[in-house]
Length: 212
Image (cartoon, rainbow, N blue to C red; front, side, top):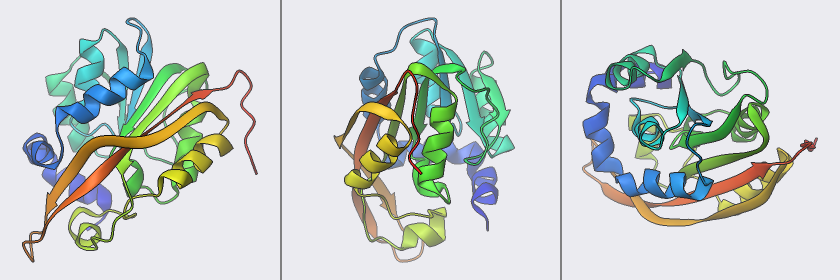
């Protein structure tokens, strides 16, 4: 089963599943780190059923939600009809250049084929001075997550995130532990694991210079 097919299949159960994986504290810390201002525009990449979007709407932001799963977006649009839902993926976000003030991606990066390219694409849609905030998994060795949840990457080294951020033209880059864990259980072997979560943030320079 492809990643998109997996998320289409679990869309109606995703909110309940997500509550077992991690707490709202992950979202709360990500939003706090970005220094949100009400009335501005935020993009939620890999939005799923709206975990991050809910928090953004509550803070008074205009929200664009992008996901490759139409069924996930259908769930989101029922709960948050004011959110602008768009189908898209890591290679091409259906958002104009320099169109948003904030970009968030929660537990998204470990599902994409090329994380560095995905980060550059997220930076493309940021306005100068805009902030990119990513929350995701630290590097781990739990292979069952590839098979059962279609993870492409078994987390990341925090130094690698900093390198990708800077290569994409971001400044004031910080990557550090969030102080929260992602909990997962194997459907087949019953293995239960806790994986630490990092938060990465950076600001788009006035004239971002991409590394080759």
